[in-house]
Amino acid sequence: MLHFLYSLFFRMALPFVLLRLWWQGRDSREAMTHWRQRLGYLPRSEQPVIWVHAVSVGETIAAAPLVEALLVQVPQTPILMSAMTATGNERARSMFGDRVSYAYSPYDTPGSVRRFLDRARPKALVIMETELWPNMISLSHKRGLPIFLINARLSERSARGYGRVLSLVRPLLGSITWIAAQAGEDARRFLSIGARPESVSVTGSIKFDVAIPAEIRAAADLLRGDVLGRQRPVWIAASTHDGEDQQILEAHRLLLAKHTDALLILVPRHPERFEAVAALVKQSPFTLARRSEGASAKHSEVYLADSMGELLMLYGAADVAFVGGSLIERGGHNPLEPAAWGMPVVSGPHVFNFETIYGQLADGGAFYSVANAEELASCVMGLFDAPESAARSGHNARMVVDANRGALDRVVAGIIDRV
Image 1 (cartoon, rainbow, N blue to C red):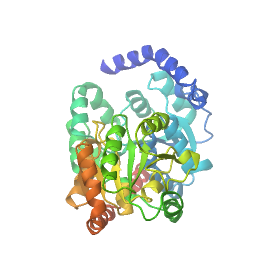
Image 2: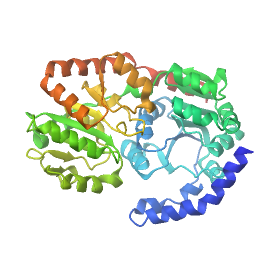
Image 3: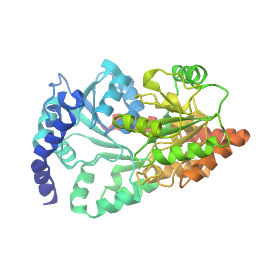
Image 4: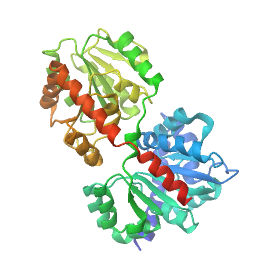
């Protein structure tokens, strides 16, 4: 009954969703160009594909090493990547070019999903992390597709939420062929809301298999030397959200009282916030340089990274990394990219989306938790003042990453064995 009511509600809401899409499309041609794909109208695939579904940029980046491995190990099967957002779709295209095909994920109405399945012709569905769309999963299962929930994570908060609708969630989890959980706690929570024990494995997080190519290292070194200034202290606040930027700028103000030449690289999570964040910086006493304008930041106090697809490189140009989505109750973002660079990792208290990973970093002496702007400024200042301690913390972070590599191989083997 809940599934029926869910589908009915989504059908009734669809006209308003499309109206909102049209409204957004006034400023974004991309938002309107592919609206038919969201209803399942996409070019018909010439042969069956492996469908890899992500939500937005974070999940798309997480899926990248998996897709690369599948391209090598099952080259005879095309890959179709889908994302819910324009930025996720653009990020996938920037990573893979014409090696895979792309589509916007269908809205989760029965008609949209059926049309998508008819045209995409998937032979398997790979879902990144925790995207339990009822019609996507149930209709794929009815067509006999193996369904994989990869890099699966489930916070205590999310488990409680799903627990309120168990009659809807249990059949969905029962339809999933394999849940590759990041950690034992994630596996336990999936089992508590109805996953079949034989379908759940603990594989670790494929995000630990992050690689930093030589060209990214070279670009980071060039940015630090030619644009930012090699001798000054630099910290980065990455993947920030509304409500955090003000606190980060206040922390930077406090930091500048002692380290007058310090530079903040500010990286908003969503591109639609670039202009608002730029305006916020201009209202402050700081001098601003914007990456989109190609300006030097050697005489600036804030460098706004208003670009897409460069976060891994930007981390490499800093000395200390603050990972956003954590000073507000967003749940945090992936800290493993700065950890792989071997730099100290700082976050706010709200990291429930990555609680296992943050726990591993904390146990390894590689993570600093702060609650507000004052604590953030004090933490960054302390790391600038004690370079040996900062280097030790960064080394510990890289050791945590290296010690947990290998999930990617386990996940790829599990998928291939079951397709």
